[in-house]
Length: 169
Image (cartoon, rainbow, N blue to C red; front, side):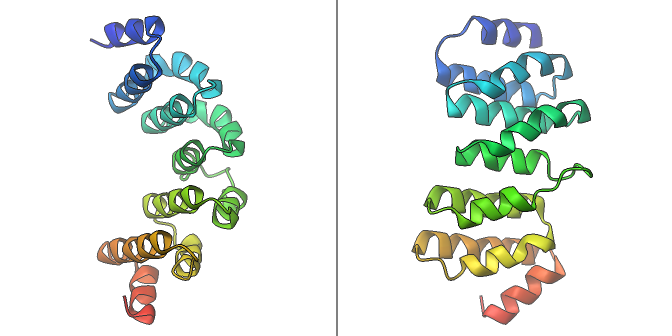
């Protein structure tokens, strides 16, 4: 099955189909697909780049971390969010700058993507961004930040429980 997916990916021209095949390889944890997936990190289509980052993150092989680091500079919210999540547990990668850049972005989608990242990472050191986003100028960002804190509190992360209590969520 895996060789068929790889062959289909190489032959496929439709970016929507390509992005689905890329993600399938990641979900199937196909380590042999890493070299092929890495070629899509610089694709012109943001959906393809985002799914390549996510797929490589799902495979989780530390050999891909150096390639994923460059995606932390991507301007697309999905690519950047997937890179932050994929590199979240890498001990030698500092994520403070990309997380702050996402928080400071004037783009709603970038701030919403940050919320996704923070829920996935579950790192209390970044929860102050969720608290700040509770006061965002956009209602959708405020409500998603509140929901994110509630999700993290349900997972019994003490810092999230405290923020939910403190903010009356």
